[in-house]
Length: 116
Image 1 (spheres, rainbow, N blue to C red):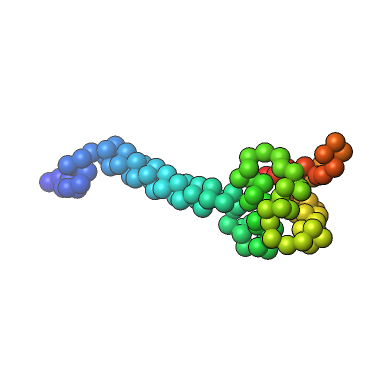
Image 2 (image 1 turned 90 degrees about the vertical axis):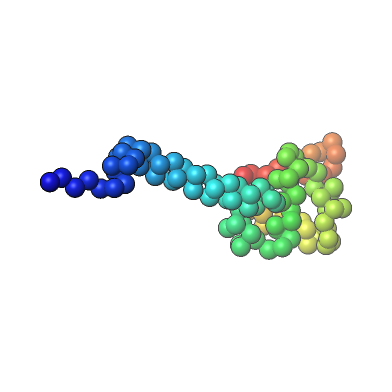
């Protein structure tokens, strides 16, 4: 006497495999969407939020959200703090490889570009 498993007898083995595969794809899509939302909100990754200071996060986020190069003097006008303090932060971010600065002699200021 042959005993069939109720589930495989009702749906078939390939149907169950496809249902499991589809379920895994939906879960992976949800995880990707949630990760994308956390990165896209301010342009920073969770790791960058943990290791950067508040001022460093503000500068990197500002450059990334701008979507292109920005003048350093405009950024200094937008951000709290003095020129000396912000210049030190710009130097630290450049050493960490998060931004790149290029001197623009015609305008007399640095152009700040996001590296990532």
